[in-house]
Length: 639
Image (cartoon, rainbow, N blue to C red; front, side):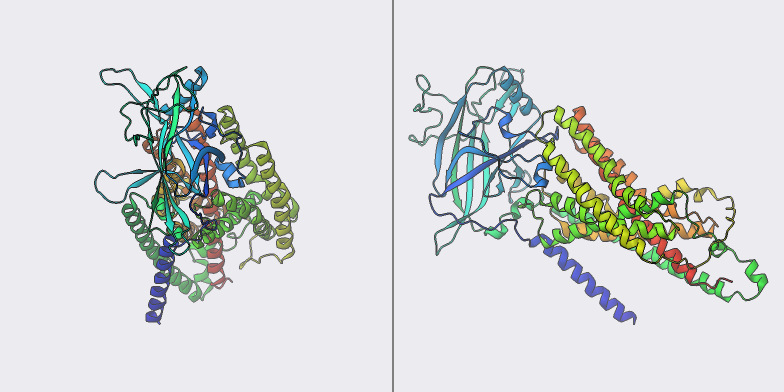
């Protein structure tokens, strides 16, 4: 029997590892491939300007860049709008496999306000994001330690700060010449090409020309007729009021062996992937070992307790019983604020369902980075539709507590958590509006969010609540006494606050390494796409939350303290406190945010994430303890 179990466990592990590997190497791209013949026009689009120092995105044309004849917005999904994406057309003219050299885009003379805006964006290290055939533009950076494949930086900087030799005065220089490289994979039979790479090298060049400027002026610093192109920024273009800036670009086409299906692989490769894998595997092994030890101790101790209690025969022995069996008449007594507990448990079920389904879709590849905004859109819609399960779970628990007003519980379940999150989000959005950032959610999108909430989520919560209330109430395995038993004085280590704080350490330990990479992808503008490992971490989190809560609940009942309902929720939920503390540590050690508004945005969003994590882990801990108490009290003979 043991050998069979070991064999099954080994096969399950192999399958899990296969899924993890598959999640990294295979995905379903978000769009269908497009074939381009030679000379076919290519649409170059511009996206938001982003900065890891301010976290406030701005639209491309908020700076005095060269505009097209008419600026057209691309249709964006809900996730893209919430991310602050503003995708628009551009004046750059690309034709498939038709290289260009020193193409003049436009000439501008910035006024005082435009000069100030440019200098501010350069000082805050803003990057320009562009898109070609759904691929974001990247700047290839060579690693200093080895001559291997380059690291790719998303977007190129608006400019750079520096000073002339012999001078200490700091100047601002703009990247006004862009050397684009479009990589394509050619089909030998049809001679059609598919775009598989979009790279740029930005330069700052003070362009010069003879005579006065007109449409036919030829540059002496960059001349395609003389085969004279820009290769460095030795004579940079300074940003000054009323000082002309000429924008130019080159386009080079390179044939590549990379196939269209694998074109995102270079974007998804992390520079520290070995550390990433090693750290996560190490963390998971430690947590698995601890979880195994906890489970083994619990099973052995409980088995001995139940055997001993069931062997009690005489009345005298029964009267002398100690431990968790003593509180059997009070253990299922409804807790104080039971309505609030029902609401939070229902909300936690809603979160659990949303995250589980999102993870499955992500592992299958439906939420790849090529589908911009897909992850956020999917999470929002799943949250709305999971309202059905929230209503069902909260009302089932409410009915067990002998509640009768199911509509009131349904309404509070549908309103409480989203209202708190929406209030924080509204304040943060007002701060972004004040900065005139494109990250501010428009009123139309805000209305769509409110409609999703009240038009779909709230009715679904009521439907779930109705179904849950119509079901027969969950019966307690033992009868509850009419008079509550007095709880004896507890040891210091069984103090509720102490045991709750201790209980949150292990669940946080299961996720904190993965949390580092998630925070990096969100706040340092990097791609995150290792959902296979994230799913494994999520499973470990569930197991850890359940086991640590069961252990502490067992010790609590052995101390004749039967007030386990809220404590089981708070024990696992306290891991959210450690998450927020870690986010604070990350802010001061890894980020360079200096602006007050940007700091408020960071802590506001991390507060929402921590609150959601509290609801999720708390619900997992509660249900584990709920199952555990029902199991042990139904296993012993109660006279």
